[in-house]
Image 1 (cartoon, rainbow, N blue to C red):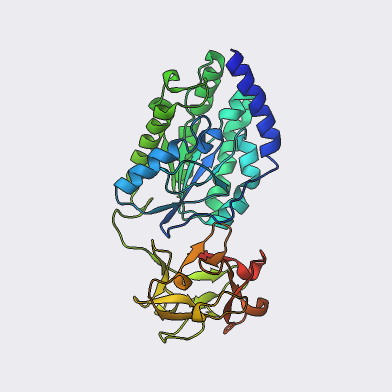
Image 2: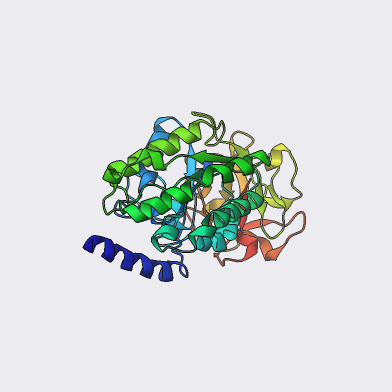
Length: 364
């Protein structure tokens, strides 16, 4: 009971602090794989076991030859977790996640969302009668913001306290109907029975799983993902070619198939000059053998961004951040539409990162 009271005090404090602060890493990890957002509270974050279920899920996906990119504004976990990005917020309820979900999704455009939320609503006894309606509204906001995404909605895991477990079961009983109604309306929403995967014996403090409990969650997520073709891509499949679209301009990065030609903005179209592939070695390739390149190994603001035969050098390596930036590994400068230009033909350069919209990009 003492452990329980200490946790509840900590959770209440976390709810106040975490609801107003976000921890954003200097540069999020990305391998160009299928973008998956782990979304929820401290169970997604990995309380008691940093990384939580994301560790086992990552290892299973890698073992299955899937290439995924976990996305989110939060970052934690051990080295055995190959991608530390997530959207798990300790102490948060459904309404707090819902208040922030649209910009999170707009910043990361996930293809798949893994949602486990509602535990803190139960622990805080927060308007439980309307918790299902809040969950339904949250799912609607997800599907409206990323309509093509596969959204996996989990029942919440068990709680050790008998009264709280009864309330959790009551809340969970509404989730299948919510998911069914979304699916019937043509939304890509799927039910995951997470509650049945664990028992109270899998909890370290009555709320959060042990390491083996988190691994049971990972196995359940992995099975659910495998039941929906394409939710995490195809095992062993090649990297996917995408447009690089400017947030400010709405136009795409375009370049002819000629060494030394400077990249530019142009109206997005389904053509080879705009089909970029982000590789595991962090190259942005085009035409099969050419790479986005910082001209002459340049590392100063104003360096032209060109296309050149791929050679493996660091001036051809880029970090695609979940905050929308594309930064040069060698220079640590941002891909920039010169002079805040938005018109066809606006040239692209490297520039000191400013956070402005002409340095924001989406691979889509």
